[in-house]
Length: 262
Ligand SMILES: NC(=O)c1ccc[n+]([C@@H]2O[C@H](COP(=O)([O-])OP(=O)(O)OC[C@H]3O[C@@H](n4cnc5c(N)ncnc54)[C@H](O)[C@@H]3O)[C@@H](O)[C@H]2O)c1
Image (tube, rainbow, N blue to C red; front, side, top):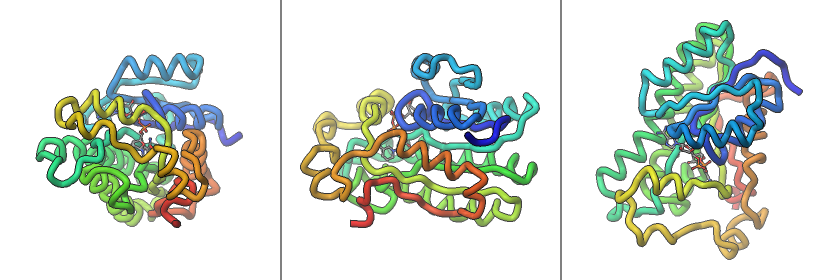
């Protein structure tokens, strides 16, 4: 068990990896502020986590800067510190290549994945550098380093997260704050379905069947020869938020079964 009376904010917490990160923080004694675009999915998170007393939920779109600021102010307004901010909200582009990616699809993916993460990072950095502690953790992807892992907009957004985080680390390190990226490989979640729901016609129907999570791919490219568990990503996020990770700053930690090493 970690320390008590710590607050963590997690975006994209209505599903998948975000929900798993909420669960892991709760297990470590944090009060967790789970936010997501979708109120319905947040309700599912509450139910899945047995309406934990230490769980707060608020619907916020990560492209709404004022909404994210309001969330941070609520955490601090309740007399607490902002100890961990996790940018997890993201959508993926159905492996759309350069010609399949319309300017609209590009803008939407970059705005949610990269700009939304910058908004969260800026809001957290302002408060954490003032309180002289805190952890900013952003969920990237192997697509930040591997061109064939996803579509062009998604790959650009995740590579952008890595560059942003290196500069962020430089900016906040003096105040005892760290900023890092956790970069998952293949994890079974609702990412495809929720992304299709959000992107609608921006992603073509041909792209919907494509995927890297088929058994041949996993066997060929991933030394672990399996997809990863949500809990295996969440555990690394909670580690980066811990006191023990205080000297880890500006880094990308792949959680990919060895994919990027191969
Ligand atoms: N599943 C994987 O294999 C995998 C691999 C690498 C990285 N990731 C990253 O992990 C993160 C979580 O994805 P997941 O796989 O758990 O997918 P998911 O679809 O299960 O969860 C994503 C959540 O983000 C929310 N969301 C989307 N747009 C939002 C917005 N504008 N504002 C607030 N919330 C928004 C969705 O409502 C959803 O609840 C994403 O950043 C994704 O890119 C996933």
